[in-house]
Image 1: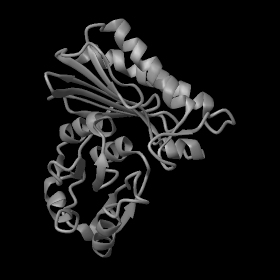
Image 2 (image 1 turned 180 degrees about the horizontal axis):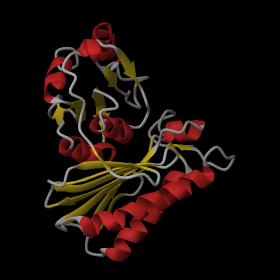
Image 3 (image 1 turned 90 degrees about the vertical axis):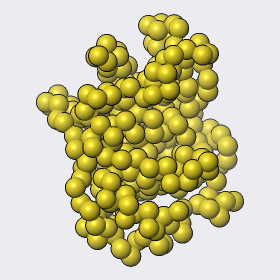
Image 4 (image 1 turned 120 degrees about the vertical axis):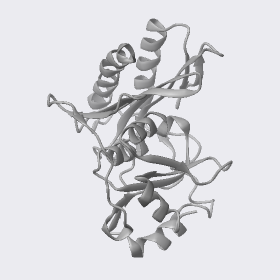
Length: 260
């Protein structure tokens, strides 16, 4: 049912990735700050989003768009809305670290129906469609159906998390959650891209994930991928921004004993 959109998004995500790889580890990143000194944007962020937006509006001129850099674009009030983070993991990217991703989701009447996450440097493509399962492809390899980890205890689990950009002035910065839960888990990773973290949850490469103060564009595509892989995504701070935990249902229940 959603193959038309997936066939459109796959080359679009890869095209955005090619823009990013062209600048990666170069001297022409054009790094700027946004909300504070820790919130950075590069030339690749801007050019990737412009490329994606132009393609969407050229193909679907009646659709709406929410982008990290450009905000609300396209047709207001449309039944279809695209939610895009052209380069999730900009800090990694600006440092020359290879974990960053392109995130593109499509919503229909408020429900996410297609989600694609592409990690250009790693050559990993993750995708899902509503009731169509979650899938992953590495390079030119065959597509593999995804399933979340079955680990049910913290002691056997590797978790991932991240930290808000306003960590210097906001005491509610996730460090307390890390301190509470770290004695009980096998280990914790901080990969630096929420979309990629969640895609790894869907693939069973990580067991559990939580993060505070996310934005819709960070997680819209990857949340669908997790759910279609049999996982749950829980907003554990209702009405306090997008703060969520993800994994299999039993493990998320264990995580919620320590994070808040």
